[in-house]
View 1 (cartoon, helix red, strand yellow):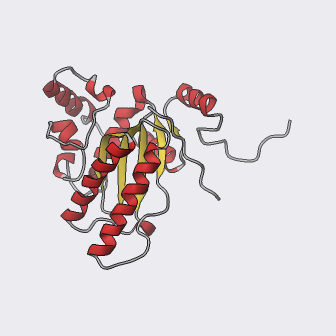
View 2 (cartoon, rainbow, N blue to C red):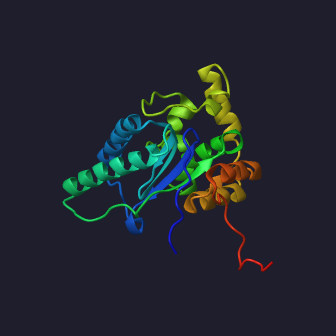
Length: 229
């Protein structure tokens, strides 16, 4: 079955996931993570994409970003993917594909779902059993969003900034309110299905508005054959 075309709108946050081919490792050493993040920053500036959150797992990557232009995210991922594959092939004396085809994504509603998606991304290493708490994992945006560590890659989203006017208080609210409880399995499943299916992540009203704007379905259809009228 062919993959659904991506839903992308300028100014609307986008959750992106890109996996290694056959879920094989993409990162092997600290230098690999650093190289990827360095060029992620470079190409995000070139393509007009504001990065709000990220996590680099061993065999896949999560990004939360807002593109200024409709083509910005695709441009970013194409340039970054090519640059990183060239690096890996050179360093590890290999050839062939590294990524599992094109990236998957979902448009994310700001008011209700953006911080949940950001939280989902930064808690990924915890859910995978790699660390006990998100600050223990080096290759994510958590230390910047939760602790205030400088990270030139990030552009905080206005929804995150609205947690408090004072940065210290904002980080406190982010830690206390958003990481007090684990994400529920229903919400995790919703985020995964929306991203893997290239659908929207938000309320029914948000989905309806996107459908009217884009002129195409932005949520999973009902199973079974259509009823005859």
